[in-house]
Image 1 (cartoon, rainbow, N blue to C red):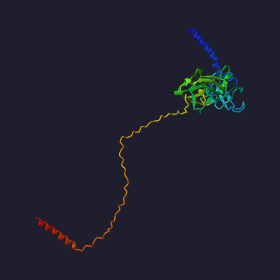
Image 2: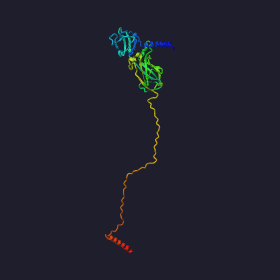
Image 3: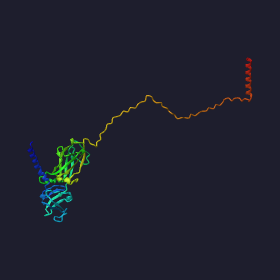
Image 4: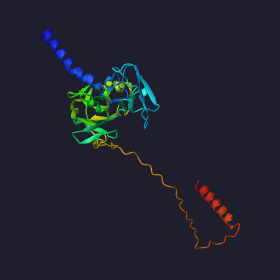
Length: 311
């Protein structure tokens, strides 16, 4: 590809992009601007250079003393400053002639996430999204009316996806997440994110209204930045605890080869002793005192005499 042809393609691309980019920030007469939008061209609304625009308040009377006044230096580069316009929504008029210039409106945005495979909405109470399911998004918003600006494809909205380890995605499966042209109050992407090849872990998803830097200038949750939705994505349901199989354990009890002697201690028992009393059947004769001793002496003397005679 030669250099001249490449430059021609770049030039054609710039021409194609420029009108759409300009249209997003070009406000028609009696159009609507959002708090936080920057670098707007409001010259078509009839606001002159270096003049005031006025707000008569809710239910105020046109031509009476204004409730608020803002000085416009350059209508081709106008900033809907939150400091000056917050709380002052509704019609604003030129000070000279009381001509309706534009309406100021608060932006609002929220995001809904759907598991298109299983058919349920992913909310803050959703514990688990099965990995491999296909996810789609729905952006509920008020900024879609930017599509009414001549040549605008819609309000730029970016869907932010932050995965495990803080990784942020600019696209999922070829679907670009940055500056999606939202052209309806309940914009649906359809099933765009197949989660099969994405890491397990916790994900956080939210949406931001990026048109004319309103999300940077007016970073309010629910207004230019939606509430965040978090969920766990993995293959298994974390609420199901796997059942562990316990194998039976055989316990071997050693049997001793020699049984230790067993000492049996019995309590001492007192055995009653029987004392037998013998009653003599024959009553011995009564011996006369002195007669027994004399008999003994006679027997002894006799024994001695016999012994001498033998000698």
